[in-house]
Amino acid sequence: MATRDVFVTGGTGYLGRRLIPRLLARGHRVRALARPGAEGRLHPACTIVRGNALDRTTFAAQIAPADTFVQLVGVPHPSPRKAAQFRAVDRVSGLESVAAAPGAGVRHFVYVSVAQPAGMMQDYIAVRAEVEAALRASGLDATILRPWYVLGPGHRWPCLLLPLYWLMERIPSRRDAARRLGLVTLAQMVDALVDAVEAPAAGVRVWAVPEIKGKRKTDDQQGT
Image (cartoon, rainbow, N blue to C red; front, side, top):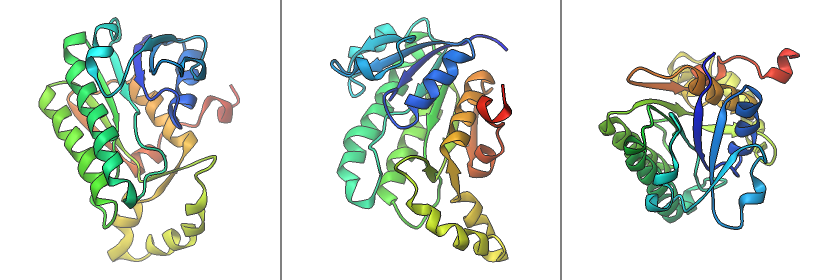
């Protein structure tokens, strides 16, 4: 396994707090962006880059020597009422990161998008689709992950829907939607992100919910 130099935005968030320790434990070098005052929330073994994810001029010069960029910035607990926040945070940070990466020598960009199409959360989907389009236009090799909802601490209410998903997967006309909009666990999501970092794409590849669920178990689950 090749050692990667990874630049992470959103490292203090729901996914980032779990991903960075995994990458470090597997021997990768991590540079993580943090707002001034939030540095203490990052893993002590990573290199801290102070800056604003909404303004690439504050961090673009500090991406190198990263060969891999992982974009995790996003509004927590997405809901339809947060449309303005999606545009102000998810959209701006995503576009700024995509714009900054090529000039910094990044070869592979990992982006957490959202499952699509879907009958709800249209503003959220539109913002993520816009960043995906910018990523494709950038010419970067990229892995786009499209979860729908990531189950984990503080994010468990959709467990109530599991019987409904079980039923929908057994109805042929609903099966595709049930799988595309299925629930993934936090462990599965982190596994998929680690796989994306360690096995860079050639071109642009998309991992939807079935691909995310199919990734290997975490090191702890494997007993290593």
